[in-house]
Length: 576
Image (cartoon, rainbow, N blue to C red; front, side):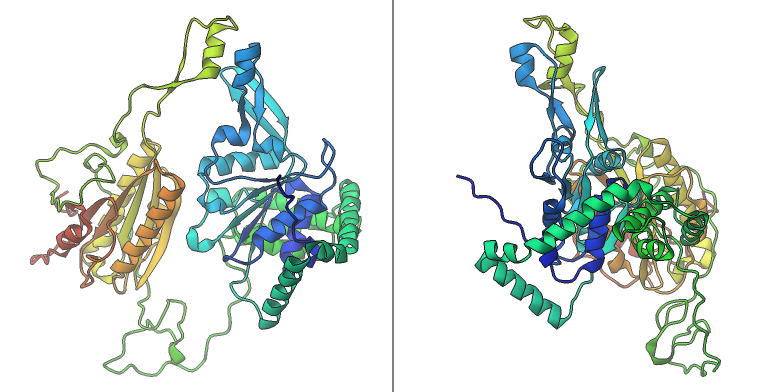
């Protein structure tokens, strides 16, 4: 006998006022597009999500609103629905078996650790959450059904971020604090202890509050369509989105819908300034690309004191008390601009299997090993078909005849998805002889080739003792010239930090997409004393040496040996 699951009451959760309101607004108007909760483990993310289902009105089928959890290992068929093979075999009728999206209709679809879910599934479920309709098309047959649900996703930032394109698809995003007060911790433990001792009595104590909250939600849903917006609301939202540098209009539309739901929640019939201001941080938190236009603090009027011989230059920035000016930490150099130089396409070696032995392979650009262009890097091409039958295609091919005369098989994937991760050395040693500009040219060349092959790119710059994302993971753009030219150079070479960050990203991406092939390019002049011998290898990695001096130190080849990577000596502008 399966024991019923008793959920913790929504109104009994201590604190979390902003998160509670954001979840309730999404229930009032599911077209807001869902709520993404970013926070550390143990911050009541799952508890609130599960408790929310008890506040929803009855489903269209009658009874309690469903609460559906999407597991990380779910397939696309399980999410969207699939052909019911039992009916095909017994009744020769093409019907669909409902997936998780159909089961969640009228309730809550909960995705824990959404940042570890495959990007294709995230994109798919966000599309359905926004439209309220799930459409399944296969071999000329289309099936659609209503799928209106409250989408809740949770993630722990320590385990990796969502790609910006997917972040934008979530309507609202709230970041939970990493710590809480002693009083809150005590209250939370006391509440949980009381619930565990006697769940029925605990729930009964909050029954009146739960009922009142449920009635308020239903009233807000009824009055939502009647809420109006003055003209200034549209102008204010547009201006604030423009100032935040958000891309597209999804933020504007979501902001208006959420403000409308907030007005209905408080019982108003018109959107007010309070409605707009309450929603702003939740809409812009994951979409902002520009900092607030609030004027910066007035700089100190006292000029900095003279540097002693042992002090590092600070670029004229105030650094009293160990604080930094605009250019970074104490001792960091102001970034120096160096534009990209044009370069010829690279003829790189074919992608190698990630599980290859970490041999100390040293290759020069003019070596004997023949390479292939970037777009030809689809490794280990499988056969054209698999031995697994495609029952749906078989049904269509036989046009309902029984017994079947033809059997169709599933098509194998024609290649692996490929991601090119570039680590670009932007330290001060790369500024001489325009090495940084030449390296930027090679990165742009890689980008253009990846663009032609419809592959993915990500670029990290490391210099000035920091690692900076220059291009977050995405489909390779046609050119990176503007982005690369905006990246200045200077300061020290945080090589270990860059390799550690790259390794972390690689593990996160491959955990989410086991079939993803990642090639890493470490572009550096090797001017560092740091060792990476004790760090995990970066899999399929190429160290591209930009050193150009009369007396070569050969440190880049040392780094290649330590990483078990291929070594390439890039030609300089004069020899290219």
